[in-house]
Image (cartoon, rainbow over all chains, first blue to last red; front, side, top):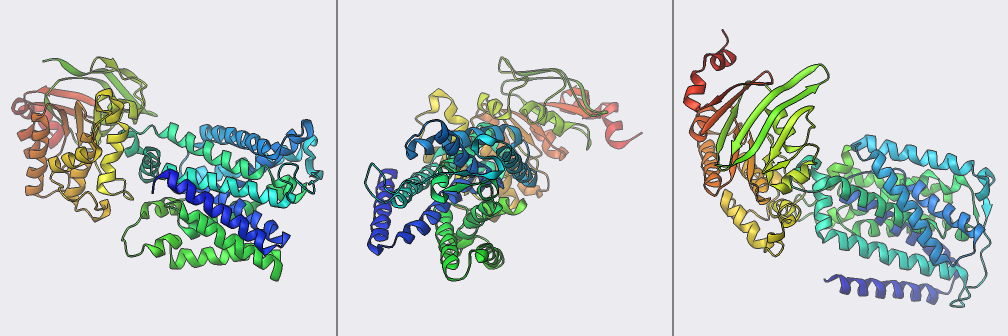
Length: 324
Length: 242
């Protein structure tokens, strides 16, 4: 399938999703669906660095929350339309990704992952001490009832934006996968020394991956203040973002774009159902149990299960993740 | 013949340990040079310094009229200095064909003349050259040891190098397999590729080399005609003791 065809199919799927949600006619569907879409973006963005390049990033919350805080900070100065805010969040987190790349990409395996986790703690400490965006007391963002542009419910608008971002992320991921860049990423994941010896500019490619991955996460974070209406550091930097985001591609399969999407839809939907029927407290338990189950029974995720007729499919990707 | 590689006064230390000291080495275009030395004599360190994996501390490396000092490994590969690894390091999640696509896309296509090259044809040509016809869709873990070595050489050759440094491409192979790889290296040389062969298998080294260089404890102790070099008393002492 050519990328233009793929883009069209993705847009049609997104439109059908939106229409289906409207057809159900319950506002909560949008509220819950937003979280699922947000995780499609986060898991896909994570997979660009983690699945394609083999660098496991534990600092998801930092990129996500910084996108959200960028929106809060800019919103206090000039009220801008949300899509612009998302772009700003993307730029801020993209720059953070580039900086993190420069500082940490000489580290490999578990050391890289620990550094990203530490970066999330540092970012949270900075936000706690920045009074302008509410500091530890948090900041309120008042969500308008309706959008001026389309005249629809604001939560539907948020849903629609996140739907658009999901399409953007997935199309980007697939574009990378099929390109020269994807081949370079795979060579880095399998053997960085051999990649360099084959002419691959590994540092430049890795910086591109951290920047792109960070930017997409930041874009996903920017609408968060308006979605939750109250943002404080412990919730914005919650470790559960990182745990969920890493678990989803692992459950779905890290080798290619459907993996994170399948994982995100499966886990986030389960979590939303459990939040309503049981309690939001079981969310992490769900991730934990499903992840353990997959690691034991299907270490290549759902994609690996589906392709189990094809031996050695992308086994290297899993090995890279297992090393850390 | 013109000089392709010119190393002078190359030195490398790891803390207090002197791995290489004052290495001078000149290799002419089209030449076949054998590099031998006991374990720990600095052969692999020299390869790593030449290919850019390690930074040397002193001396200069000139390749094809350019100073290489401080250039990243991928830049050196693109300039035409390729290496194979002592232990094969294939991209194990990629197929054999994709393993070759990496250097074709990233190293060979960096040259302006190769922008329009047909990828699949080039891939087939390389596989044919090393005798891995029809294995393009296999995965490296399914290859035999000798096939893995061939893939390693094919991948190094995919970058269209001027100089190939083959770091123990035959270690652990059987007699017939050694001959196989040896013939392959000679074929590559016939096509105009300059080759530095690092090897412990003396039979192969003697058959292959036009010139033999001996490293002992980080210093070059001999350099010249292979038959004369191995009669050199210093070389004998290094290998056999007093």
